[in-house]
Length: 280
Image (cartoon, rainbow, N blue to C red):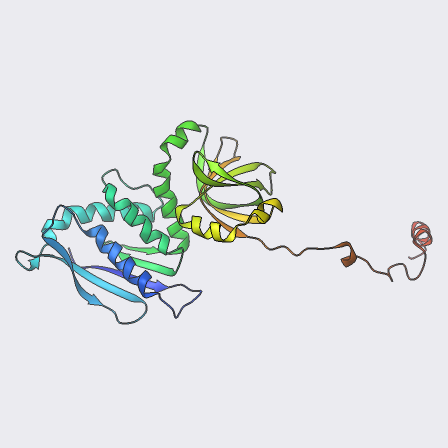
């Protein structure tokens, strides 16, 4: 084994700004993943850290009893964690042997790439690199969250396909879906009413941005998350949803009015002459 490295890059929306809290917490969570709690005498020693953006940190395991490298003591744990991250990289669920207490840590790392961090680069060893960008983070989160839906899949066993994507529609209700916060939308293409469960990290955002008026006026929105389809290809539910509003320009009758359209002729005369093809 060799030291493990993580690099955190700023969001492309603010390329020169990398929040210190985001960068540091991302590094801390990464080495938390690699820390085997059963090895209380082993810590990950910081051997390198960059001083600017992108921020890079590198660490190696050290046995505090001997102050010597402890790769042999952490090898099995690190291999399990990195095998799990490799699964997420390919959009697959975590292996059963991935430590249960580390799953939420992995989620936190992925979610920061949706809010504040542009890309996280994790060294998985053997020249394999996990580039976590927003789209890949969403795909990986969908793979993890799919593991938590056993009860839901049991209740709705007609689900035939799952994919990450988005739907557009009009908001028609704020409700709950099996005791989970949910938005109901009328899907634009099919006209069907779709329940969209809200993701944990989007709840505060939605509480601050969505008002009763948005529901009453059936405001148009794009819902992005894990889409569940039935065997006929119809959308049944959306999980882990995030919402963005679609602004539309209101058009009034006066916007279509053109007083010179008939060239000064009364409407009935203009129509008669049009029917007789007098305008060429």
